Image (cartoon, rainbow, N blue to C red):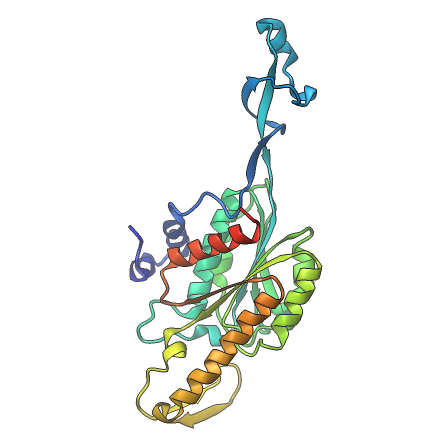
Length: 298
């Protein structure tokens, strides 16, 4: 049974929400184990001409008078970097949404962190906001090591200020020491000019990127009927408007905005997902896995 967002919200604790959401999804973020001659023994099988002789168990040959090859599992890991936009615009929560955009992004980051940890991947979770020292804060776990879990870090975050996306590439170079995966969770407001450059450089560095644009249903539908004063969350700007008068133009500009973000991804071999703060969290995760599988040809 798929848990509802209302039920997940009622659990309150982020760790419980994330673990409940990922239960039964998939065992890991990527295909992290393959059969081969590694160090973790799995089983024996009869020797087949062409097998590498170094995997023959000579002691077993002496006992059984028959050739056997040792099969094992090679542990493969990847660097995974999860970026959460913690700017003020992510704090928006419509009347019918169980989460704000920030809370939904934080829950997704927690889910990805659980899955990457299960897979023994190196995983970093970064929060971006110009209100943070240096513009970011982070939690990190290296592969094959035990580390503190990300819950205290994630619980400490709150949306404020603006997100310095232009500074993201140096952070990607730092946290993704080798070819790895960057998952960016944001509404991407005012990122139409910045994102293409980030993705072009990431592609040149052979980094995989998955862009998850998180919006509120109110942003997609503009459901209001009475005249309102619309306020920019990240500046003093306010605009009085009658939603009925501006709805058609708003929908056109919104379509242009989301298409610009999607096109930036397609042009730079990055995957694009869109979710709302009301989207079923499991469906979003499954969309992520399907996208990742297609990118890696599995």
